[in-house]
Length: 204
Image (cartoon, rainbow, N blue to C red; front, side, top):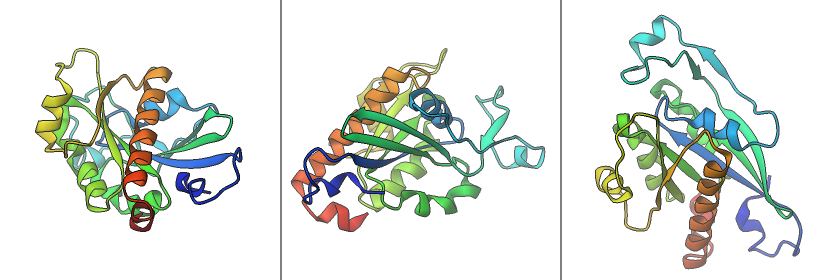
């Protein structure tokens, strides 16, 4: 699978470019929902029912109605333009599955980190992971029904994000909202590539 920066390195004009994007975030933040809402193919899901042993590991405060969990990944595809296809890989949110992140991140252009303001601290591991690796990411605040609303600057401050990291509001259930988040990430990644050609690709 070619990364988005391959066309910047001399891929023929008009040739389709395949871009790999991660959908990350805490347990129950809406990763599976976002992938499922924007994909143009039947999504691949690896959800399993929450088990009794898992209840001692997964904190369900605020997620009492959640009955399943992703144990490997979610996968989908969306065509942005005739020459740009995005492949989506949703990461598992629970700590016991974090060992998979390195493999899923290999060759990715960047990540959309979904944040749930009811459990904002749950997205810290994702933010730290991408910051440490110098991988472009944005934070998309998934606006759950009934959840208190916060401004993007409030979320930025709470997560101690660098000024250039975009923070947007989204509703993972709506395809147009998910698509906007993906476009925001691609825009951010291309800006970083333009500022530091060659360095970002080497870091990923």
